[in-house]
Image (cartoon, rainbow, N blue to C red; front, side, top):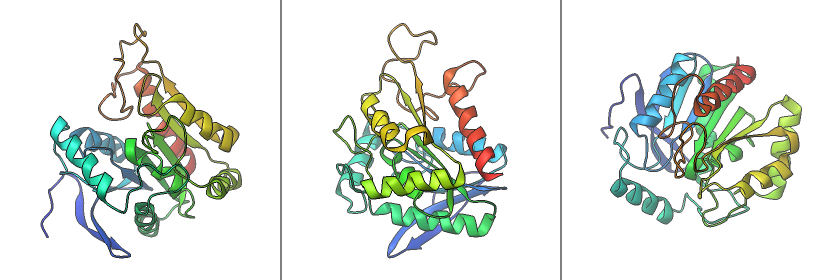
Length: 259
């Protein structure tokens, strides 16, 4: 099967338990698994992945839906969301149950750790996949989870897409390895609202680090009120901008836990 090429990345079909998705791999150093947002691996997602490669990481980037390299647009956003809604591997509405695709992603993390070695791997999810990174912390290979604008469960202001016993296990692993779960969001984001971070903080305590960027009208940096994607579409990669500060903190988190 042919795959869309992305400069700097090898690609092959990764198969686990009957589920198969293209997996893009590039870079050198400890592994970070990047789980793209809707509509897929857009140029902005690739830009973020390239920043990780430049910082000395091997990026493992599965393509779960959409056409890799295609720019974000209304049609492909709607199409990707529809695909996620009907596939049984995704559970977009579940408040205390993870999506089956997380088992596939755990297998990717284990492969990444086996190939790259080190203390463990980083895992970063975005939007619909944001909370997947939380589920991945249940796997022994994962040491540094990041939730960028986690939007599941859909239609709920709060909820964490993980059972209470699993949340307790995540906290135990954070305590055991002295790590944190980092969450990123814009304050005006209707898809990732404050109650979700409140729930995460309640369950994880000081092991949850919340980074919330002001997007209220008239904010200092002129961030528009519909801003959503902290590390991709709405990233301003310039010193002094709060999204750049968020990116720098993510890179610092990976360095502290993986190197």
